[in-house]
Image (cartoon, rainbow, N blue to C red; front, side, top):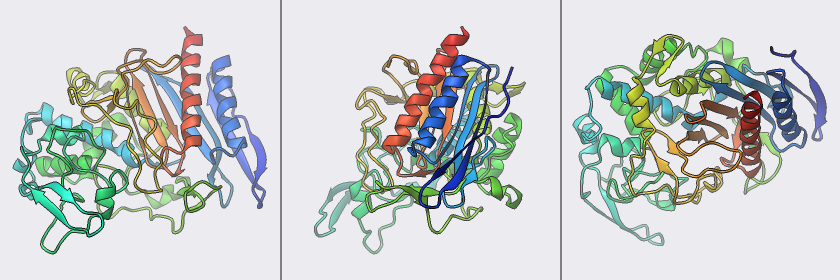
Length: 415
């Protein structure tokens, strides 16, 4: 059913480095069209390299790899390449925490401070003077719950999603265990944040295991995600894609290598990011979700838990398209501003865009422009991995859009 690997060689940049692209896809016009569109994005130098995968509930329908894993050396990108998937770690952490919820070891409505005492003194920012740096804190109207952290409604932020977090300097004696004060009372708004780092700490506190050990035992081994880990073994180092970025002060130039490159190991893994994985491994993760928590006879979640994770858990609150506060990320323009919702670990699409995912689809991405979506209504999911900053780069999003449209054309043609 699968056709042979195809090669392309062309040159880029002053160094005229050779890039090779390869793909394996179902022998169909839809597969060939996906090959063509992804190859074109690389040849146009929109993106340095891309690995993409489409799966249904039973099997992988398409997988392709094009371009280079390292713009400095021209090392070809292969389908088994390892990517730092950053915030695509968050759904894994959310699944881990929901396993513990299933077991009755932690409750969604429990105050998180019940398990993490360092949250007991958390404060809300009442005012902040950017010119003087002066700020006032107050107690929250309610303690943040486990669900608040799963849904990014805790009040936490990131320095790249909040100019206040970026600029606020703690006074002597003030400590903010997860990066800064709450920007609002828990439950009042949605704001992308370090909340999933808290979820990771909750997993460790309740399970008594380190995060990587817990993931390995309860998620990665059962799902046969053999290439997913925080710490990349030295033997797999040559498969790791280089960290890259657009050059220039505003990250609007040609793609170049980041310096220095991050190490293979991570000293303190966190729930919000840091995993390395392959498109194939993450494809197994999303296929498990499509199948209601099970894959190849291994069950990691109950079907009702997966369904619960895909429901709106922020009520009338909606997900806004955030402005970036740092150049490492563009604005969050891929969100349907004020219409999308959030479940227990996932963005929930509410709009039907012609040729794309169904309403109720789950998705998110990682800061190096890795993305996924899960469409339960249509029974398909997609994973696309690139590896460069800034996040939500316009050309990366365009490649993502083209890939998603091609995935549905592939599926429609099959039917």
